[in-house]
Length: 549
Image 1 (cartoon, rainbow, N blue to C red):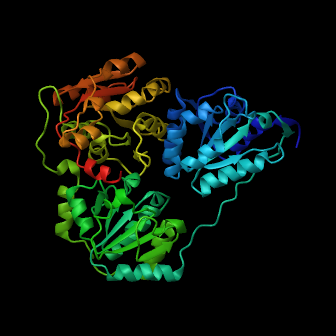
Image 2 (image 1 turned 45 degrees about the vertical axis):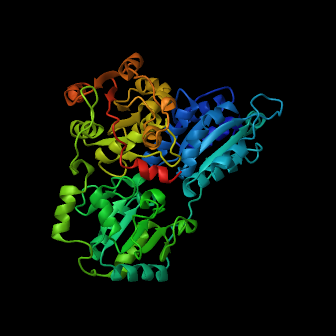
Image 3 (image 1 turned 180 degrees about the vertical axis):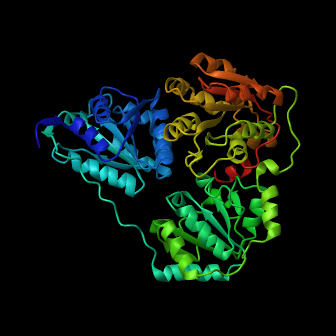
């Protein structure tokens, strides 16, 4: 070791040395030094306009890149501003390291119990308490984030940041745990269930997005005749398979819901099988056998009882089961007629509908189908929360499991635009498409400038019904007054142009010509589509969503 450095500089440098290549945040006095140290060490810094946006940008980047990401915050108010985004990341088990400066004097106006805040929202609090242990805490924070799949708050007290320590010769080591290999007896029980099933369905979740998992699951499904579905966060995993039902749960199409509901065996692969994925359990038939595979023992049976639980990595478990199963057990759920039905009717856009709206409002299904046809297929789609969200989530196709970024574990309105920014930074090879409602668009509008500054070739679609539509459709039928959730129409196109976007207002299908022109053109500015959508009826998923309240 040669020379000396400060704790702030050592922490920032060590994080980059351990593999963190992107840091997102809003810089203030307390996190200035550590952020600059990360940049000096080679990390890309992404400045957001609000800490809430920064947290979700970092969350989405980690999800879509498959790499740990850092979020850097000022002490006190910087952290509290970011809490909603941190809560979403924590609930989603996103590998995120939150670097937050921490006031050391109880008399400071920035003093809050930051560890308690982290605990309250499900993040893991840690603290760099001294110069001597600083690098060990960095290694522990990264190990917890990456290998434990947790969001970690690493508090950096101001007085400790300024302390000196010897410059280390190399970054601290972050040991990786061994892979979780399923036990033979558990695999045998799973295979016994597969042999007995006549209508098996696999539902893959976030834990099935790892390397080789799709191939292993499809190979096993071929041997037992299983149909393939995903949770919302893994949407796109089985894209292109003739046996894919797309998403299970609230977003499932009528045919997908029917086929999942008729299954005699449902296997969750790295999937929580929570109320959203199973429609509060109603999507799984009474008497159906339920199996669950997860590398976290605490996840098995957490949301519902299971007949077969296997603790193991998804890919390794599927490969082990295929080896035991051998050449297969017959056609299972599959048949030529069913394959044809899936091809013709499993997508929502193939379900007939009567367009709603009038001369100045476009049906959201008509809008989204047209956008699906106009926009390049190589895309990454991000959606906000609200009544509108079913349309883009189900009607916009995605190329694979890294084409859909779904920050909805906390169901917060206002995260959509920041989600799209993070996804765009992680996948610069794809067109980022962001879908938001009018409420979420205004909540997240501060990051419109970030999109333009970063020169992201993004399409932002605002589904504007001039209301908080979820509440309108939930409370309106019972005769409740709705003045508190209706608003005057907003000119989102003008708002976007003020930030440097190109923009079109869409009230009828013909207005989408402006989108086609943008797609064909140089795309030297992001595009906002100000879609004035019909609000005559709720989206089909809304009633399901309110069951969870």
